[in-house]
Image (cartoon, rainbow, N blue to C red; front, side):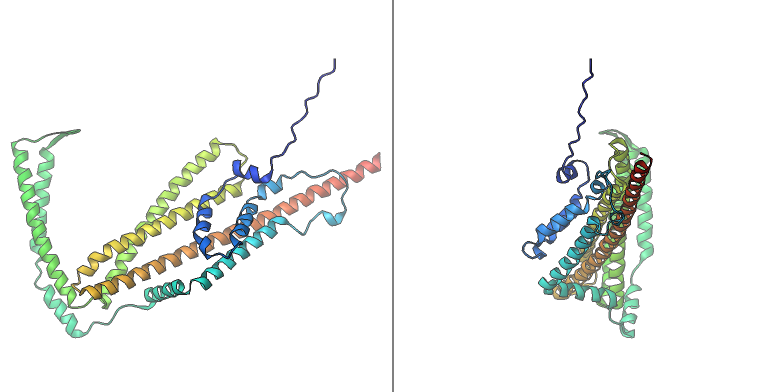
Length: 367
């Protein structure tokens, strides 16, 4: 009885369908492309999308089957590699996109350059000796010792109140001594807030002697922006660490068909997304705190509006420049990596074909 031979399933899923199921589709890069779609010429978006799809076909091209027939030596190392061609076309399309965006939006680019120049070169107007003397005279009126004493008394009453208070989920129990320290804490807190508000008003009057456009005002604005920007980068770094941890766990638990290049691109797009959101949060937080800073200098409404507009423009320009540099660095790293992987694939395929040719000649010689 002859055993029935099972026909091996040699059906290969097309590249376009296999990329949507196995390979990673960087949604973030696609969203960025959609955002810049208004900057492209007609028909250029479809070309970018085709190049975008062909860019991630490296793993699929490396798995193409090779024939066992004899091939001449000139075909062992092919020179026309589609991976290199697609990578070069994608980089050229990105450069063309940037040039087109600059040409179509001269006013936006002009505002961007103005804000960047303000951030780099404008350090504020010099303070005259008379203004500096008036500033120091206004500071002498302040009594920080009284504020510090009121704060110490408030913290002492809060410590005793929290020590005597007993909480159980939503139920709170407070004895007679606890009630006494509770009322004392609220009383001392009100005194401290009134004194702190008076001292803040005196400080605002002293700062008004200098002006918000002075070197002191610009230095305080720069310090405020740097603190907000560093906070945004810390948030992005912490989120990227958690994403890297969970991506590593998911890659171990799932199938191992995913190549290291696709995994690195997935991590890279996640890091870019996190830092983009972190910088956006930092700029929005800076603009929110900038309102209070402008009010602390007691300036007129038109001076405050002028300063707020140009300070926000400088912050947005710097953040945009930082993100552009980050994206260029990431794209350059991906470009070099793809070039190296393509060169390695070409050498490996060439070595495999050369080995097949040698075995072919040996079989013909000994046959």
